[in-house]
Amino acid sequence: MTQSYHTILVAVDGSTEAELALHKAIHVAKRNQARLIIAHVIDTRALHNIAAFDAAIYETLEQEAQTLLKDYQEQALQAGLSEVQIVIEFGNPKTLLAHDIPEETGADLMLLGATGLNTFERLLIGSSSEYILRHTTIDLLIVRDKDKTM
Image: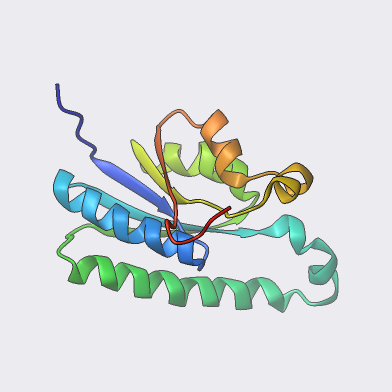
């Protein structure tokens, strides 16, 4: 029995690990002749105090995300994919990536870059990938940078 995926979701945040996940997602999508969804969540939890003083910060962050995701979309199209969609959401990345975005897009596989947090940082703020691993209902692949050590 071979497993094939139809809609592959990759979460990106501009980090090196997320870019590695993107490149792996492109290859997996090509092998499966699947649709690729490139998603970015703007974490509004960290912006509440700033936004009270400057509401334009949301617009700036969305424009930056749009530029980054358009570049990633172009890379995927140039690599030979025919169906590449981008998604930008505002909110809690953990819950949006674990539940809402996979459900809305019909994704059956998600790729995430490993955060690279050390044990103390994970204890304080928690790892998004760890939360998603525990709560999502679709297959999940965590992509690690083999050149980095934890």
